[in-house]
Length: 250
Image (cartoon, rainbow, N blue to C red):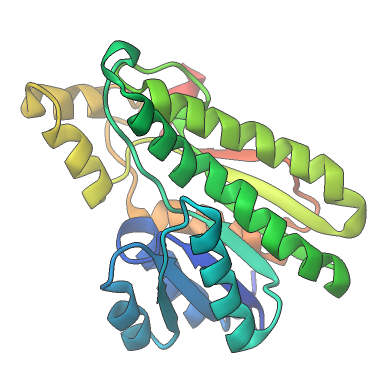
């Protein structure tokens, strides 16, 4: 593995303000990438600037926000070589308590954003003769989980879109993959646990559900995304790399 796997590569990524995305942003920069990092949080501008790249505040749940982010990237470095669709959103409710608006928002941030951003970056990848797209799926896209009606559906949609795009563009040297994390020690997980009726019991249950009896670190998931995005995975496409401590192997 080269210490500069991404030297000169132009990376457009989402969900970069905190957690896995933030750790990954720093890793990609250290490995030579040119990065435009998007997030809905306004802090992304300073966070990215301090790290040495461009941060863009964008709501990628709709076409206008995705276009805004893509236009910022192309203005900065031209057509992206790599897309990392990492932004996520969850409403932890069973289906009978999930409103249509909540369903639509969860689907939009997770699955629709991958659809919209892929449509924007693939033409440039086709012209450039190569590309890599990595999405963040989840154990929730592989198995059914309680109180995650919309989230399971959205992450499942990501899994199938990744597989479809991989088949569609394999002959064009565009690889499309995803990571499937279990629980990760991030603010995202904190919010999920805090929303449960008994947060302490929920925390214990989430940890115990993973055979390794712990949560992933953001760096562990970031390492997997970086691998799939890099030429180290040059013959890997259509794959969902589970980073879940054995969760779906049970």
